[in-house]
Every structure is written in structure tokens, then in C-alpha cells.
Amino acid sequence: MPLLRTLSLLMTTLLSGCSALAPVNWLVPSNGYEKLDGLRYGDLPRQQLDVYVPAELKPDAPVVVFYYGGSWRNGERAHYRFVGQALASRGIIAVIPDYRLYPEVRYPDFLRDSAKALAWTRAHQADWQSPHGPLFVMGHSAGAYNAAMLALDPRWLEQEQLSPEVLSGWIGLAGPYDFLPIINPDVQPVFYHPQTPVDSQPLVHASAASPPALLLAGAEDDLVDPQRNTRQLAQSLREYGVATNSEVLDDLGHIKILLTLAAPFQGWAPIIDKVTCFISQHGAVYAERQASDGVSPPSSSACKVSSR
Image (cartoon, rainbow, N blue to C red; front, top):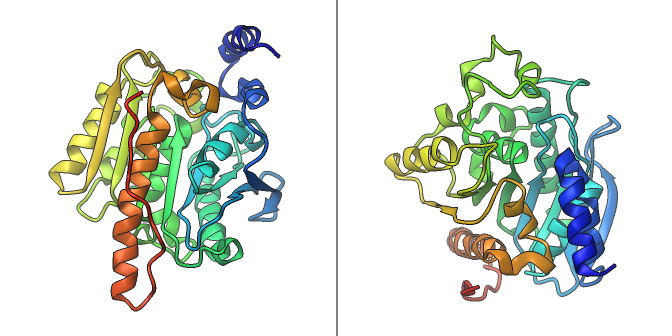
């Protein structure tokens, strides 16, 4: 399908939300990785995930669990092959889970699913020749919220006998981290508005123990205010001494920042380069720590960010 025709279709379908991203997959390479489809991390129908293993896999490659957005009401992992391909093309093992959505569940059950998927991933890293590889969580929009809560609020990983210390870092794209009172009518019932628990907000869980963070947003985002969310959380983390990279990029909106991960649109903004750089840097820190514990560090290349 010609690129212009596909872009026109995307602009139409994206009006219905993130779950309409499936057409992007038509434009990305279908090779360069092995896709392990429909692996179960739990017994419930939506507790399944896909794994994208790079074709040129290096020992102890970094592993990223990516949570998609959709206002905790819609989305499915099959629509995010373009994310798996983008990460795998950089030598990163990508895990994309489904999780239960409203109205089947409300807060915090989707966090319990997210934690369970992360625990499953950690337990299976050796299956992909990465038993000692650095582990990250990443998400867009509502998925960035899920990633943030796993990284900042220890309650959810504790239920899986883990802690945020297992993470080398976390990455949020256009994430909502401080959204009380809830204005969006689609989100209100998900969080029991107006009785939303204050501790449901990632911002209140920022601490000196938080893992390193990469927080990116678009200046043209009219759904999730980047000033209140991305910049405010980044400032709070820095005040606690947490290694935090953040940027609000011009000419990007709420959906466009996600689309820049897809191969044909990576020239719009260097989001995948920034993600790769962050993973490389903090994966190297993890490798040094492993080496000090007597574990041979994985090979790593220098972090390079393009000027696109």
C-alpha cells in the first residue's frame, strides 16, 4: 500500500484511539526477529504476551516489557508489532503483554497483570539467552502509567515477590503521572472517580529508591499535559537524586510520539534513538554491577544518537 494512502488511513483510524494502530504494522519489516506469539503469563484470557527476539541476538541482551495505552479501556498486543520490531532492530528483546481492561476490571487490577507479566518475563529471560540481561519497563500513555507504577510503587511487584530494584530503568512516553481530579469521562470510572485513591498517582511514589527514568512527551499533546505530568515527575525524581532524562519535543502530539517508533516514521523525531541510548547507558551500569558480583558482563556498543 502506498505510503500516502496508508498515512491518510492512519489519520482517520487514529481518531478512534490507540487500538486503531494496526495499519502501522503494514509498513514495518516483518523480518529481523523471531516472534513468540501468545505466551501465557497467567490463566485468564487476556494474560498473554508476545516476545520479539532479535535475529542477531547477543548474550544477555537488554529486555524491555512494553505496555500499550488506550485509557485502560482498549488495546491489544497484536497492534504493536511495530514497537516490537523497532526494539528488536536495536538488539533489544521486546515483550508486549495484554492486560485486563475496563469494564472487566478497574484500578488496580491492570497493575497486577502488568506486574505478573514482568515477573513472568524475568523468570524466562534465560529462554532468550539473557539470564543476566538488564530489564526495563516502558509504556505509552496509559501504558506509561502502568510502567511508572511498577517502577515507583513497590506494592505491585511485591505481590510477585519482586521489587523495583530488578529494573535497570523505566521509560515513559506521553504518560499521565498526576491526573487528579480526573477530567476525562472515559477514565473516571476506571479509577472510581470521585473516590480515586490519592496513592494511585505515580508522582506521589517518587523517591530516592526509584529506578532511573527516561520521560518523553510531545509539546503538542492535548490529551496528557506534558508540563503537569512529564516535567513535574522528572523534577521530583531529580530532587530525590534519581538519574532522570526528560524532554518535551516540539511538533509531536499524543499519538505521533508513539508513531515515531515505527520504522517509516522514525525520521519525525529521534525517539527510538533516545530510548536505545538510555537502555545502552543504564544497561552498562547494570553490567558493571553484575560483574562486581562475579557475573561476566554482556558485550555492549557505544550509545549513539542520530541527529535526525
